[in-house]
Structures are given as C-alpha cells and as structure tokens.
Length: 91
Image 1 (cartoon, rainbow, N blue to C red):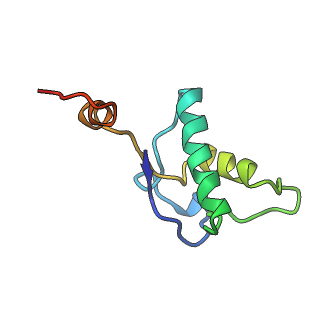
Image 2: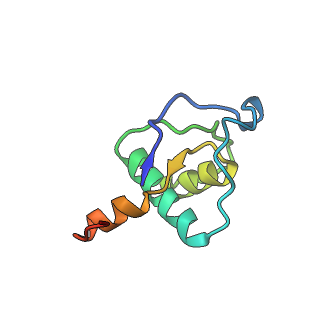
C-alpha cells in the first residue's frame, strides 16, 4: 500500500471533494491505512490536520482522524502486485 507523501497541515473544509480520499468502508482497510500513516508520523511526517487542544496526543489517534476525514490518500495494490509479492506468476 502506498500513500501520498506528507505535506503541510490542511483544513479538510478547504479541500474540494476531488482532493479527498474515498470513504473507507472496510474496517480492515481503515486499520491498514491508519497504521501506515502512524508509521509516517513516528518517522517525522507532519500532521495534516490542525490539532485542537482537546485532540488526542497519540500518533495513532492522529493518524486515524486523518484517515477518517479523508486527507490521507492511499492506493490499493493490483492483483498482479499481490501475486508477485507472494511469489506467484499471473501468466
């Protein structure tokens, strides 16, 4: 799973619908995307949302809120990429 590179903080209200990531309906995909984003935050990426005083401090919670609001772009692997990763040929 690859995600967009971190950028400055943004206000989701300022983004048009084309810039927001599609709504994640699978809780498993949500967890995977949020975990990848939390890893980016731990490595020094800047949060994309303005932090409110009552907002959580943990990077995992920040990542989940970013994913929930759609400011994190993600890309699912293709069938061929998955098969290649498992050592199978698609031919």
